[in-house]
Length: 337
Ligand code: TRP
View 1: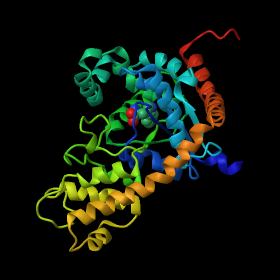
View 2 (view 1 turned 45 degrees about the vertical axis):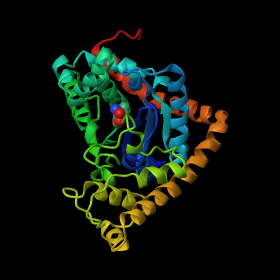
View 3 (view 1 turned 180 degrees about the horizontal axis):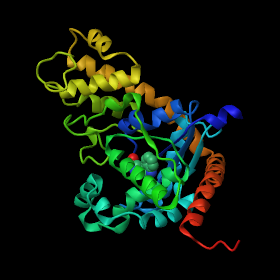
């Protein structure tokens, strides 16, 4: 009990907006299991965030369930962490409203991700897309999280979260823990597109060979790695500048085997790109198979998954409610007491 009381709280979330790539796995989900002993971890499936771009209702529902199953299949233990679906805890929306009143439109309209997404979804630039970082701040601040593991693309949002926490604390008195970014071990290892190693690997790439998803089968994984773009000098050597394709494959190999880049270079010294790509493909495929099997098993047990989500939402709400009551009191909402 006492030990639990001194653990720092850590919050993170993933959007249920379709396929999860091996980049998301290495950069985020895989680490979630590794953090659960050292910290009090709270993980959410961010469905409220997902609808800021258009989603098909049935797909969103399915993706939410699949993401919960994937979290568990990747080692997140619902007995050790709080695992829940964001929309199941209304406090996220409620705190967002209050934080909106201390957020300036300019802070949101100049966010890099808002500008990028507005350009990509020009037909649907909505207030939710703009307000997305305030909802994210609410996610984090509701749980008084001290640490938030974030990739480079979410750093600006975490900065805003810190600004809003400080602003609220200054205006209304100490209320929120000001969170710090948690720098992940593999955060330097950004996984790039297999088709164009100058771009980040993304599930929204129009070329399906550019990315590997967590549900790609063995043949698909191997085929996609065989097609991966390399270069013409046939040497397996890490050199981001001159050999971005080969370097990306080495990074993936390192991430899935734990072997250092130097060891990997030695292993493939004198071998052709064909052998190298096949080895990387087989390694990744072999790593995905047990995760896919466990996820499939979990998806057959919907009662179990529903139970996890229900319990997760209850536990999350217990913490969130305390913060929200404090906020409501500080801003002057009449409670009838
Ligand atoms: N915006 C994050 C992403 O797309 C997901 C997210 C939502 C999140 N709320 C969060 C991440 C809170 C960290 C903390 O990756």
